[in-house]
Image (cartoon, rainbow, N blue to C red; front, top):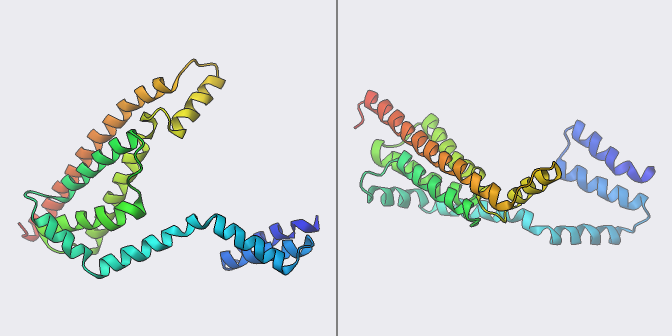
Length: 225
């Protein structure tokens, strides 16, 4: 039982709100020592685990790249691009992106992601569309556009992923229903999922265009054309 002391350390550390990484490392080291491992064996095990799962830390590189792009004019270039597109607006841009994201998810094409697309590309362009039409947004409006941008990723991915017969979600549904005695195939689930995907596109476009009218109305009250 003493070898389970690492679990106790984690529980106590989390309750006392100590640094998460430090608590986990201490728990691992203590568990290794109690289990008869040498310090070098423990360090080797930790090192191998880090190297094996290093892809989990790739988001750190993504964030630094996004920061550098924004620091050196990403938003300014987005504004220039949007201004060159006639009648571009925040809602129209997000509606187009959600439609593209939905079809990409339906065919299991791995594009999108909050860190990979929304933060460095879609949100700056959506913000730029607002700037091009109404000038710099206030903090509330900026947060609303961020939420709308993030939502397009969630809706586009979630409601269309089962349209692909080979997706994990589709196969899970088939196996679950089969175990319950229902005679279904992956093609059946994928075919019915297209109705949901199309509906999500229609609702998403309507929602984005409604927000266009909200932005327009707000700025009309302020005297901004």
